[in-house]
Image (cartoon, rainbow, N blue to C red):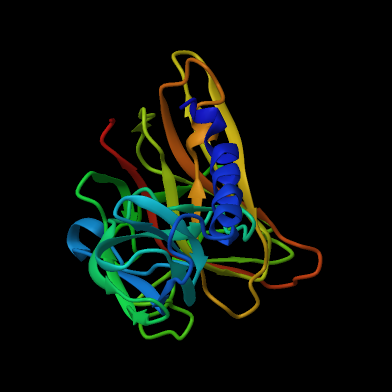
Length: 293
């Protein structure tokens, strides 16, 4: 599939799945069985995959490899099938944090469950566990717990990227999170990660936990043989006092400029006139891709 059609195709597929899952049952069986799923979480190998923080909003469900539908969690849905079957569940996310655009996250492993289905009976699957697929590649994992940080402020940045104090309640998890403060003197912030990544023939996502009272942007610097292009990808709005987890799709942006070979991640912000003390908190920044298919 052309990578530039990636997001549009995902949206069309999700809408189609929802419509299909709501259609009247066809075939000989008219009385369904039911399945419930409470939630899905992931586990990781922290030293190589980073934090297990996730935001799995949906379940994409297959019965014997045939699509049943995509369902928001917690979910209860009908299934046409009697006796022994295999259910496969793909953990789903809100693409770029947008509720209307969802997908099965390409780096989380499918969950396979043998089930025995009976008409009108409910099979309760409860809370289910997934993990990263073995093909997932982590170009960057920054949890702000090490001695050095993988992001450097640029020369034009007026505000610094710091660590929260040990034990500070502002931290998301662990001892530290990344912190940016802007005021009426230091009104602009920009940082870039400290090494180049090769643009792959595969999806690329940024995962991130964040909390902010000021709009900020996440984007990419693209590098070609003789040119550099700065591309904003998404603007993130204030979250109040809440931490959020987001999955940002870089794939289309990485392929939008022919001839580009490498990229870096940037994060920047301009202090809002509504905030005298702008605060941006970051944690568990990952750049995830996979081996080319």
